[in-house]
Length: 520
Image (tube, rainbow, N blue to C red; front, top):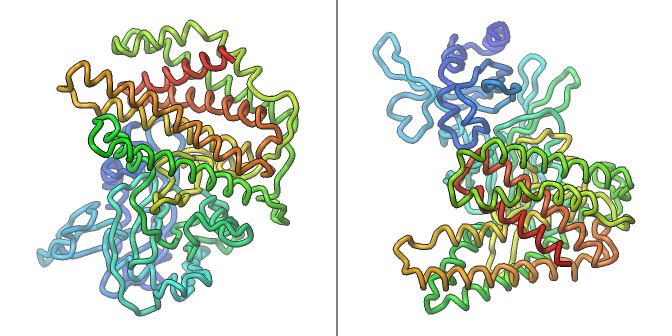
């Protein structure tokens, strides 16, 4: 690792003092555990070593592009993008500090995450606006822009504001000016990034407009022929009223409180879900167009695909139920009854999954969103804009780029609607009188099937000719029900590992799905 650092210093030793990478390796484990985008916070203190370093000259700000190999205890290593910058004490007030040291003259110097410094963000944007390339040894940093970037009014050397998002998840979002947003990708894998290729395809060849336009990207390449790694993506900013999750919860809170405009609020929510169903169908139709691009060309579902999907769902069921059985003795009383009811239906569940898909396939495997829920949709007046096409970040890149049943997205959204209702139930004030609480619960539970059916009907009405949707409506609904059951089982395993106090929500969801299918 130190040899790589020295070779970079030989190019321009003045921009980055010797030994900083060792200080970063020592301090980054604790720094990462405090970051919302770090994907293994619960695993314990990781080991960190430098994987790649590329000088990134910034006026008056020593900085480098740095890739780190991070190994959480008991887990496989991952590559994370954490660029570094050195700032004096006066400039570090809002920066994310990794380590602090003092010079021989007594001046305090802080090593910080570079994107937390506006000067670095401006330099990053300048490289993108100019289509710059930077090289160091075998490594090459490529910045690329699309034609749509000119329409935003951003220009090299121009002035624009920088605002950082407060709801970071697996990436870091930075608002650039009034019309663009920069997504910094933290967890890296070699190969084409799904967000990048899907944005190019949807807003280019497919002409799908209900997603932000791709404006540019920066990737790290190699002269040895290794596949590039996407580091950041610049997209058009869409003015909105928030994501679908927070927007929906606000309306459900009015319904549960039965205030003066509770009925109006939930009517707005149902109307928006109808539009969301249409937009989802349009997205899937775009994924199903005939194209020469093998990464997006639809492929007929084969019997083996059906067997694989059933096998994967049954494997998930065993994983979830085995986890419940092992945790049974430490579960809260309110969760214990539904858990025991589900454990008693293991055989029924497995049989239901085995028979869960249609006997004959009349649809195609296509690309799809892959991590579709209310939080992945922006509310824009009465419309919906779909974002975040990178798939589930913890899954391998090949899995996130694979073609599948697009109706998995529909199932995910229906489960998200059910979760929103459950979250609204949990948010009811503790001091609410028993009669009022029961009335609020009743209103929420009566609303859920109306909302879900509205979304599903709107989707199926608009998707009847899409390659990824079965030609018979009954077959389409059967596929959706199958993937809803698989999704709810995934939620059981997730909540058991991460939020045991939410466990009753997906467990009851699985029971409800089994009960509904049993009555058909």
